[in-house]
Each structure stands twice: as C-alpha cells, then as structure tokens.
Length: 111
Length: 108
Image (tube, rainbow over all chains, first blue to last red; front, side, top):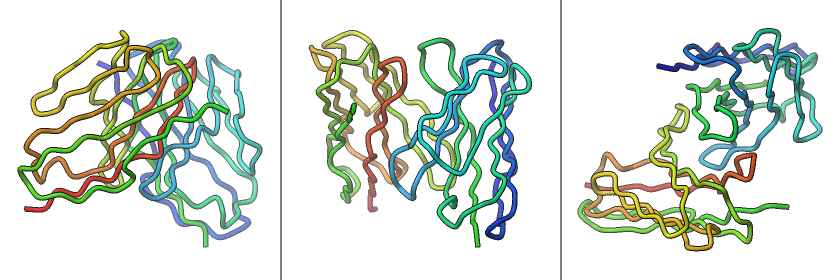
C-alpha cells in the first residue's frame, strides 16, 4: 500500500531564514506530486505540482520554490521566509488524473 | 477562473440531527472527491464520485454527484460527535479545484 510522509511536523522559523520541507511517497512509482498551503479551517491553495523528476509547475507567484530530485521525493523551499509564509503545508500524491492522497502536513510559523 | 462554491461554511448541530453540505460550480468535473480533515492533520479521502447522477453511501454518509457533473452533496444522517471536522469537496478538471470547506461541529 502507498504511504506519504512529511517532515518536519511543525516548524518555527524567524523571518528571513531559509526553509526546506520534505515529502516522500512509498509504494508507488512515477506519482504526480503536489504542494498545497491551507489557511486555518479553509480550503487548499495549490502551490506547485510535478508530473516527473525535475518537472515543476508553479500555480501562484510567491516566495517559495519546489524541487523533485527523485521520483518519490518532493521538496518545498524558500531562501528567505516572510511572515505571510506561515501556514499549514500539505503534500499530496496521485496517479495520473486520479484521486489525490494527502500527507500529515507541516505547520510552519514564521516569527 | 474555476470555482467550487461550498456551503454552508460553518454548521453546528446536536448529535442525532441530519445535515447536508453542498458543492456547486459552473465547471464540469471528470470526478469529484470529498475529504474530511481533523485539526492539524491532512485531509482523508471519504469518497470519489465519477458518473453523473451517481449516489454512494458510506455508513451514515450519502454522497451524490449531479447529473451534469457540476455539483455534489454530502448528507449525514444522525450525526455523531465523531463526525466533527472540516469537510472539503474537490472537483477534478485535470487539477483538483477545492471548495473552501465546511466546518462541522456536532455537540453531544
């Protein structure tokens, strides 16, 4: 069966510091991978998606970037965090054009 | 811009009551998913509906996909405190378009 991991679970970072959030998927090959951000108690905003290694599509202009160095690894990064980057970050995977399955999320607080 | 309107935004009911949550769009979806999310956790898939007019039941939860595949509803019968959470619908157009969520509180 497939599982998806995210770490860290929570993170508190100062403004201007770098960021690296990691997501890995087990039990499937060549998944589509997604990064979302969620405001408290609200819907999800798609940030990036990837259909293969090194292939990244950005949905909204922002202070973040994403990379996919391996088939089942997806990384969300920033060189300098802003206060507005605080939020709940979710990684998801899917087979092509299929249902998405979410990881446990990372709570990021920028102070 | 593709939008998925979800209503109501908040719902607070007593245990044992029934409720319905709606998702509506002007877009046609190839499929639609419903998720439930607990605070501090990722959304968990409840169901995927694919065919227009389709009805799926998951214990006390009934999901319906509109005939034109533009809307969906989730009906919960005899709600329990364990049903409390954020319910999200998401329509698939090649990408998932999420509704803004319905926060359900079931009081004992």
